[in-house]
View 1 (cartoon, rainbow over the protein chains, first blue to last red):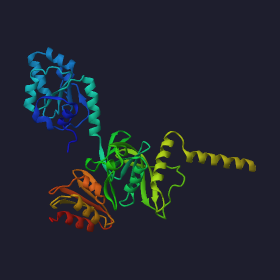
View 2: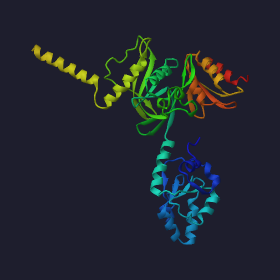
View 3: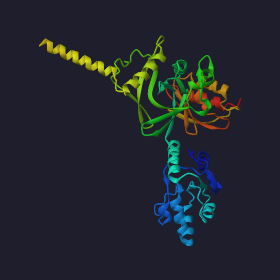
Length: 311
Length: 85
């Protein structure tokens, strides 16, 4: 299923549809744009037909200078059955011949009042975020002190309950149970909730509750960059859990690694506080303060000093 | 791991109540169970994830199970959503 169609950019950027209405369901498959200047000069060897074509002032004034025969031929070449859209910027006149050519191949022609470079950068940003690789993960995403924490773990381990306690402590819920993740660019994972279950939490024994109406608009947010993963698991006696915090585990989502902490669950352990502190400690580490490492260095120094005294 | 394509025949689709029942059934198995619709894959043991797919009657979904009792889980759950009642 295509993620972006021509009609989406018409709506998003308020474009005026001039012709080629039948083509507005065409998929846009790449975030690259094309300004077909060389094509207008007659060079169609490498014409990237699958891209959105932008005609700015330079291209349009050049087209006007062409002989009628060249003009007709080149504008005709510009419209293919692949081209998702041709956008004329700065509210310029649509060149004669382009409309006929576009109707023939049903390529949507649109007009925008914006400058070409400005529109191009907005379009690129929009298309990149829409066409980014996505995945869905079973877990809860909460914004804790500005850190996007993805809480994962088996069904029934207490993810939603922990999220509820975190919300009660003033943190923000992004998504419960199912987190849709987009890799916006290398190293940036952004999580959102599926629209249908936005703001909702499911708590065993209570059912579905709406966090936004219960706790207010300050308790939710629509999307958040994911920086930390906390994996909850039932306490396993045979497994050794990290006691020092010197090593860092990673979780790979799409192509990005994020820090992963495994936290064992046992009655009496206050998970919300532990996760809150994990988020704070993660921030501290990013600021360059690593308590475990500092301590380890100090310990090494003391041991070394002791050895010298012995001699 | 076993996989099966199933068409939903429940009259209301996986509306809230049937979805809750489905999840309850799924939770009786130890295998990891997933349900996939239009390339979106969710954990079948989590009710919110399942409901977020908004599975209607007549939709074809992919059931995936992985674990000791996978075969059993798959036949039980596919039977449930293919039930017309």
